[in-house]
Image (cartoon, rainbow, N blue to C red; front, side, top):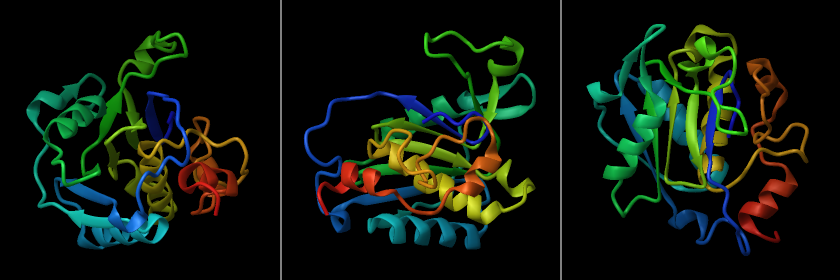
Length: 212
């Protein structure tokens, strides 16, 4: 996924036969790994939102600190979101289907165009602060509350971001069918998230679950 002001996506598009979700929702396990001090109310909100949206089992790991190897200080102190994803992929247990990092700290990535080149101006996009990054499809994603908590509609936006990021992990690309689908691309404007509903459009539901 790629929403420059909020969520980001590593696109690894693969051909799919049948529904993206290959087993019943209640058998899917999603683990949330807090990084730093995440308020309990926020953890409860994220856990409940993902369960209510997808019907998955949600477990929460004890909080840990992000590794120094992911730290970068070009524009401001941040952690590289791509490094976090690689780390999470290495230690995700087989008993967990998807692993979502939830960070207290600011995260960033290098934003590139369709040809793989750093977007211009390079000074702006080489280390670009983001709200989230996930693989599509893939086993891990990470969301940061650092920027969100300083803005309006904090909780509503967070709910949509975690649902969106996990949707990408499940294999859902950006949606062009539903004007209020939670899988819409925000197109570099976080306020576009406010136009979305906390739900998948019929087209995305069909991709994920098959014929309903």
